[in-house]
Amino acid sequence: MNALDYDGPRVPRRTAMACEFCRARKLKCDGGRPSCANCEKKKFPCNYVPV
Image (cartoon, rainbow, N blue to C red):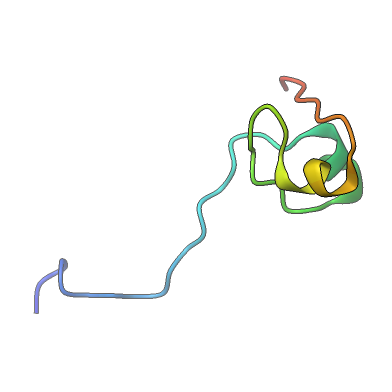
């Protein structure tokens, strides 16, 4: 069995940056542009601020 055959536990991809709405409410941000899924659902303006 080599390393390519191993199907270990999956690790979710991290988003490079969360929007202000998700960061303030500690939600999982999908990083969608121009608006993430959480902001789309809540009809909230989606703003990304560089750290």
